[in-house]
Image (cartoon, rainbow, N blue to C red; front, side, top):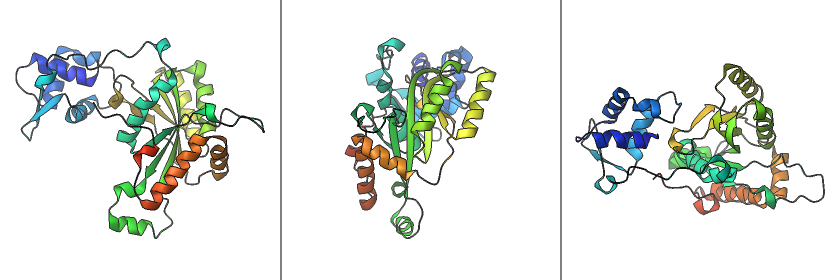
Length: 287
């Protein structure tokens, strides 16, 4: 079950409002935690964070804050219908889920790159140059006016560019090298590159090989929880490159109109120091 489903179950069984910690303790005693679809290092903290941001709970009091289920949701136990079976959805169906995660947890504005729009004529076309999703972090968004003024006076980069390769299913030996080196190839131009998967083989031999590849090539790994996006996690952080590959950026811009539009929107937003959200993929609301 998801963290929200667990919290709802506990609060439905208790008549009185509970703190996030009390919800966790109760769930632990009842054995509900074993049913959680999560492998995060601090699941109790994840539960608390999701309860604070969820629209399904009403906050009562302060220090400590207690929660109860909103009256309108008392009859709604299932938050959402089950996600389609593995063979009923495509990798691109995961994009809007990942874009939400990237915005709330990484502070990024993302854009899907439709590789079918690329110019495949002329020189030999290499399909392993197109990232599935690109993202940008604008430094000015987190700074006040005075700090922005200083940023504009120095040579400090004003943006960080990201590249993401998404794959549905499980990352394991049978597909590791194909998926990983596709991410390496598609991310060479960016400051940070990531391979995003739904599940990862936990066998020690596989983990050792994955760790070796990450350390060697600097590609990060993100585990995306499609049923509970806020339980997603960066398993391995990417190694940040300070120098962008402008030759590859130029090549991608000429090959693909989506990437060209992405660069154009970044240029416009940076000049006016204001993000025009319509240029980027829509970010789903938390609920």
